[in-house]
Image (cartoon, rainbow, N blue to C red; front, top):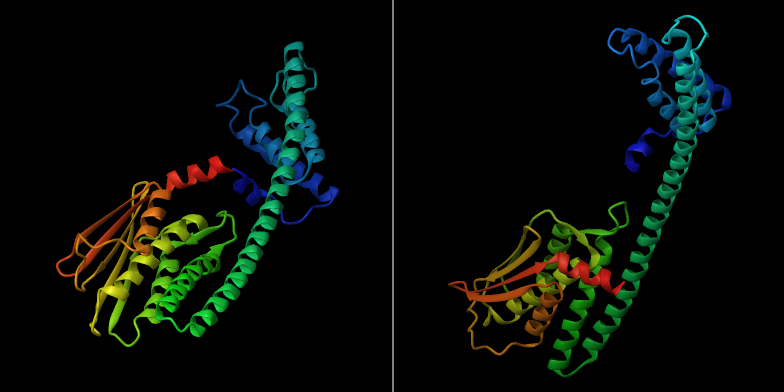
Length: 332
């Protein structure tokens, strides 16, 4: 409703003379329309003038609405009330005109208050969007600094296990940084285009971890706009699953394809990561990445399943976005 009102509002404030002149023209056109419908609306001399009053108060100000009310009452009394073409008004019509003027003036005042409130809300929304964009930019910069520090520490580490752990931590930091980069600070309330975000994330992971192995990471994602916290959860899950496939599914310089599919299934988001590597024995003890995936899925009210893809391994994560948002609202 507020978007419709904003589209109707003029981009600049009109002067009093122009506003009152336009008000008279609107009332005149309404009278002509009412006159053309005289045979169909003989019992409703005041009906069509109500929208004219609302339009004048909305486009200009309450003064124009008051003027439209008076002009409409005089026009209706003279042209459409018996005796016509006279201002001799019966007691019944006089009561109707009094109620019409009362309603018209009240509607004009309320309409102007509504117009001002919606205009203030529009300014507030634009300010919020600007602050959100600035916050996302600063957060991304802070995360970039943290990522650089972790990268330097990883390069300085002599122990390969420590280096791998730092690289994994750095990849998780970059997931959050990329979500901030994709954040849209507009009237959508800070949403992330999940398709672009996951495609960028998967491409970066492939470049970082595949080395010289011929491994392709392909992404197929439904067009989904999700809140930033949900996007971060999805990104972290994709990060862990693709990282595990890149690290363990293709030993001895093997090549292959890792397919990431994200689709909407009603209220759920289903993430499927499939590789064509050496497979995933069910007896394998879950590592830190697998535990993190299950924890993230649980936070979004979801589940994780693992199956043999013949060849390779397929892991499917089902998330309930509404459950996560309900939890966030309860915390707030």
